[in-house]
Image 1 (tube, rainbow, N blue to C red):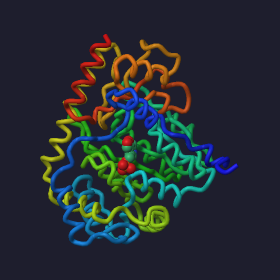
Image 2 (image 1 turned 180 degrees about the vertical axis):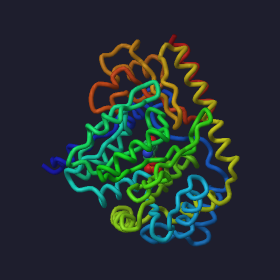
Image 3 (image 1 turned 180 degrees about the horizontal axis):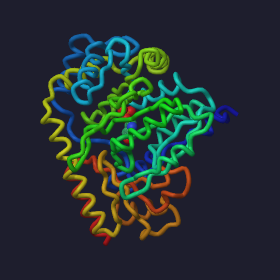
Image 4 (image 1 turned 135 degrees about the vertical axis):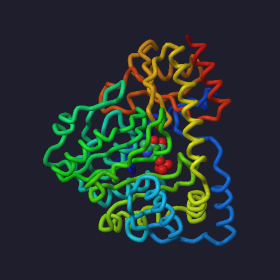
Length: 384
Ligand SMILES: Cc1ncc(COP(=O)(O)O)c(C=O)c1O
């Protein structure tokens, strides 16, 4: 029967999308999906309009338009001290999701193991599975989502090829400290591992924390594939503009796979992002972090009042909350109970663990317009 392949069987609708659909059916407030429906900055929007009129409507080079590759390289130098050659070490792709898929196709063999810190972001796991790689897990534990370096050592075997660092992390909000990154760097060098990074939330850090890009650490640039994008920073999740930065001999096959799978990221939208990067002052990014800090505090206070103790995130825009007081047995039942009782949709904690460790957790996304967040918090407080 058509469709009955192992690959067709392996791909299922993500829990996040399932909850979004349930939420719409019940007319609830969707705190499940990381849809950042705040306003797109004017310079980004206007430059994309102008680019269509100017004729940026054809295929671009396989690794993206020069204007965007150069803007990304300039941003990485200024913000994080990373030197990347925009002509050979930057690949623009269909979001950071596209960048990771192409990097996995280019750099991993079937059967290679890749370490994910748990709780993990589901797309990381599923992308690895899609290319025949095998995720292995290192647990991080609250309150600060720390891990024992011995656990990382134990997770690494002869087939381990890479480790993924998502900082700030979805769903925990963990921001990896310099000490942690240096410890991982030492292990990666000794065991000759690739370091994939997902830094899509680099502009969402709280309480005075600053983003540290792993590739900026001594000795790490050569083995790092840094991935990020503009979905979150510019509220353009539907534009699909992201990138990978790494050494040229890796960037070339990653770019060729980008050409094969996506051909290129949308041309006028590449220009919108490039010109937005050039035009937006530091105050834009500071304002963004301040807005999300206020939203984080608001939702954490409401969760505490609702009897769902939050693990206060250090970055990104999600909160994992302890929901053991809601009827179980698992996180799916708890999420459905909350949706029916309060009209607030969340993601079951199970989506972020390979075992039952997330059964009492729910993830709340606070990337919401203020009036929706106010209403969600009112409903949560009413639960108490
Ligand atoms: C950790 C992480 N990486 C990547 C993405 C998706 O990024 P993009 O839109 O650039 O593909 C998300 C979106 O939720 C995310 O949480």
